[in-house]
Length: 389
Image (cartoon, rainbow, N blue to C red; front, side):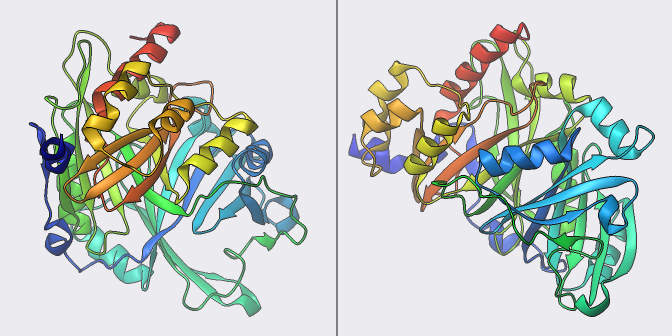
């Protein structure tokens, strides 16, 4: 058993870990991390209540009619180093309303914090990125100037470059501070965004791997092929791209040929095109966090009892009793660098598209390859219930 645990899941056939990925990433585009993620949603006010009352996010800023913004309403929600922006349209004839009509609620912008928004835009567009927002200085009066630009990536998702060194306001010009925010839910230990996963159409994975390598200077951290991520019915392939400091990690998935429809194809069918499938939130207390979230009504995927019967032999001691992991539905995996604990929510809206992952890392830089088969089977049970397998 000791040899099996030490060898780890990352060494299974079909899973390839590049330990030198951080060194191989280029530094022409220094990214300080993810500044925020913006969702375009059908009802921003209700979405803000959902994230406050069930996920423990605090509303810190607001933009809308009262702040002089005429076409949209946005709520900025924050918990520790995680910032979400929830934006809804104020009329039917807008790009936001059209986006929600076609995709449902979804991620529009994964924004990076940078030192120079103009340079970031120039470096990426000259390498082939499609411009989305030309560099602009947003005057915040006494709060200073926020600089922003953006380029496009898969589907209709964009990456904004946010430069804050000369801006001291609550979030951005046009937003006002929420002075007396409603009380957020307690008990969740959610610290930062660990990774954001993009689903692309069959044949597009390598195209966007090349895009992040050539345009953003990322390197490939891990490659999972369909020998690893498969069941009797469906499969996918995935490559994980990372920047040089490791603060930004983007797994990119595409469906693989199988007897029935994979979860990736189901996402694309209901989202209408490529998009951000899920965001992983890092915690240092997954047990307490999942207990709190379950208590508030967040629904998670369940794992069969058989998964936990062999878990101790596969991963060894992970600091949490197997009985507790099974009670809460938490998965565990180990590789040569350490172990991780993770769990996935069910889709958070009616369409089977976007969901969240909660992840606790103890040395491992992997993504739970040892859990993929069991996870896929759990997802297929959900797909069968929806009539989509």
